Image (cartoon, rainbow, N blue to C red; front, side, top):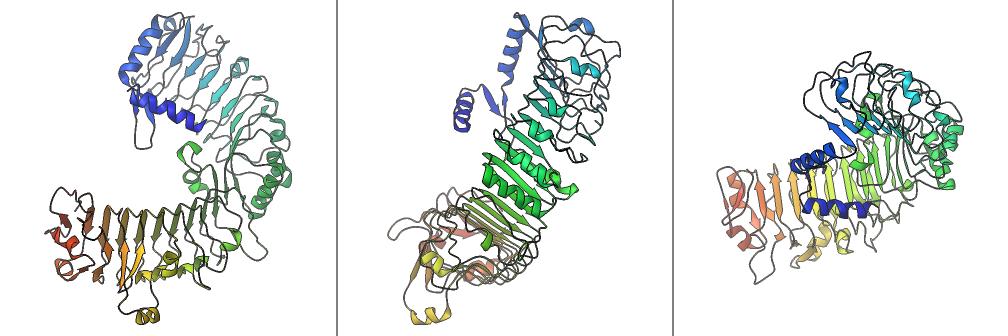
Length: 553
């Protein structure tokens, strides 16, 4: 379904029927197409009234609300008041959107009373404080959208809304769950991510047996509620937060027993002020199966249970754990892995652990003050590690003095690596480590380290970095198109082979940035002198390609 949707979307984009909306990869209908569609619908048998983003301060007069209206959108205006006696007779109305009228505080009791066919009601991001009892008369309502209604504290009983399939209360100000939710037997989508919402009574979730999407930030302090969710056979997408690791482990264990949803995001102990940053919608994330652990005590009796099909794992501020690899043995589908602020972590993976992470595509290490090894070599590496890794980010790991042991490349690891980003690692001395004894044993032999897919090399604020690779080593990087070296004054040699022998260097498409002094530029050695010859140093401290190279200073 995901792939089919993208095919359709690309077809619409290619034919200029929709266009890109912003950097978040959203799209919007082209203005001309939208205007034409509205013009057609305004003369058809079922009519639209669309006055979105027109800075309206008053709701349209009652005589504009005709009986043949099908859809009404007044979204993102400045409407703050609906007359208390306004009673529009819209017998055919199926959609009403008042989203984004932040000053709107209330919906009059009679306003919804004559809209018997209303199916979709969107009041999101309004200032409403309570909903009218007439809401309960909307027997055909299938979607009620109230996300972002921070002032909303009271709702009528929803038990009569038997047709309701979607209820979105994300960010609403409710203290207790709406009465009658357990009677909504057709409900498929339920978002209860209300920051102040307390525990759900036992039995509510288990009654919603058609649920496909469930989201709540803080739930399940009892074993009963964990099992209620785990038993939802139709659940496809679940986002939930757990205060305690034992509840998290219990839930994962039961998921392993009853079956997992195809999409999930599980978190632990996310503080109130950080929750919005952690609970993004799945549509904004590529990973379908995610776990975020925050300030968890792991190790010893506090074991960690993770879903076997996990694709995205982020561990933040879990300071008691020193070796995380014992929890990763069965994660054969892990694609994205991030460690942030875990003060006890000393290595990411050990050569003796038999964990090779060969499906991992992105690895990010931030603020790991005890980290000494990316791969701790305890015995000879005999099989590739990180063979599918594409992106490596290492930031603020002050005790890490080398990035890769040479064995990692010699056993054909990192052959798919495309981006290396190392920044603010004050103790970093080498990118590729080579034992001094081996270097003495092979004083004249050139060792080639091949990274065939490497496109970007970024080194910044590494004051102790002396070598990118051993003295007699060369990095063969035919795909490299971006080099950035900043604040690395101790580097004396650029051991990059950017093109093959007897051929023009592969430089015309390369972007190079350098922020070291000109004296450094004059003294630095290149593996291939031709590479340096086609570059020149400018007064802003950047390497510049003589021809059409695009350079950022």
